[in-house]
Image 1 (cartoon, rainbow, N blue to C red):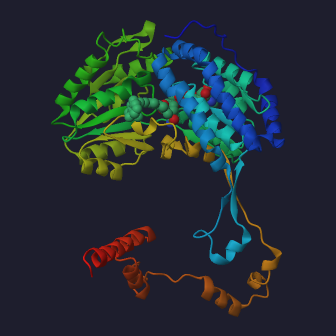
Image 2 (image 1 turned 120 degrees about the horizontal axis):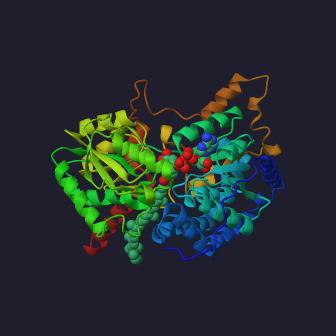
Length: 531
Ligand SMILES: NC(=O)c1ccc[n+]([C@@H]2O[C@H](COP(=O)([O-])OP(=O)(O)OC[C@H]3O[C@@H](n4cnc5c(N)ncnc54)[C@H](O)[C@@H]3O)[C@@H](O)[C@H]2O)c1
Ligand SMILES: CC1=C(/C=C/C(C)=C/C=C/C(C)=C/C=C/C=C(C)/C=C/C=C(C)/C=C/C=C(\C)C=O)C(C)(C)CCC1
């Protein structure tokens, strides 16, 4: 556990100070200083070192708020973010550079006009965080906002108050406070923030609050990113490695005590292998918690009584049978990793988002049935997991959508900080992480520049219109279709000429290699064999 460090009492920001705070960071954006690449790089470097120097406070706060182990606090929050800062610093210059536009995006005559896409910061943004990864999920989007050159106000979750106070100190003592501010508080403070005009709102949290945010943003046509929850299914077929599936899915429900937006809510398993899977699950549990889950220093606790009671209600309401775990201790906010075998799709364990260490197992007769059930329970979950043969996993990917997906594991697709992450439909709008974080806070502004000397070439556009000139222009620029009215590709002279020139394949690189092989064969044949 974390070393003893002193921690400030939670203090909400005064609601009537919020317009002034917002105006101040908005004013800083208008100074244009945040657009300078060097300024952004310095802020990212400072954030890196702030994370390093505040590690003891962050570990202590995460332990206090969530009973999060140092191991998890480092791998999923602090070290994660340090990697984010370094990744962004390594790539920022490249991301921020104008994209010069040319072939194949531009038809040849337009290449005279110096078309390019400038990467401009969106402006002043609001980032609202949830409680489960209170540090990572507030600061990872912030890395993108800094990199893009935005100013920002951050609103940590009040449900993890110790973390909220450390985050405020970390940012306001180490970063440019004219550009960035932290507002602490709950509904009144967030409502006051939503009453301000933003250039983008980045929200991570529940679908219910996401809806409030999206409605409010719509009033001023403010773009929003929503990172929401979901009822994530796991599919297990007869062809799965059941021991591996059990161990990996248990990991998905024990990290942060299952308070992970991505962890599986329910497992759809072929009924023939259900009992064996449950035996493996129990074995995996014994391996991970040789002295029981409660005694383990690794297992986090439920964040507060409200969420503890919510999870208890799900367990009380189920008609299913507990096949692993089941112990609860309200005084410690402890819930044992628990699996419930259910027989109805309408069971609360199937229908409600667990967001805790409990999940259910629903036996099915076939993969067809599993896909039908999953599409009925929630058509657009944040994640899905499939344990089956290659063909079965491919079928699951094809026949059910999700924000992201992992084959043969729990949420591994989302365990890397530099690749895009986000939901789909009602599990989220927009992606971030890595380059996507930079893009998320960037306006891609296309610019062209028409040289005076080109006037004669492009004067076809002016009235009085001249059809003859248009025909001439088309003769030089319009591409002929290589398909007919039925959508079929026409294999004309061009097609066969290309086929011959490319030696039967497609693409210049392949053709080059094939020609190289032919020439080499010819050379060897004529030289080695004396011809
Ligand atoms: N997709 C993701 O990346 C992701 C990550 C973490 C959590 N989640 C989802 O978030 C949920 C759990 O997190 P949570 O409980 O912190 O979410 P939440 O929606 O209750 O709170 C998120 C934020 O919204 C603020 N808020 C709460 N009520 C509000 C209101 N009425 N008006 C304005 N602001 C309000 C909170 O202060 C907090 O900062 C789960 O549904 C989970 O799936 C999603
Ligand atoms: C040791 C050497 C090597 C190999 C190392 C390997 C293969 C390490 C594997 C590490 C693993 C499995 C790490 C797992 C990490 C999991 C993480 C970070 C989970 C993160 C979860 C997150 C962020 C959750 C987010 C939640 C959200 C968004 C919603 O709630 C070699 C082979 C490289 C060689 C040298 C030595």
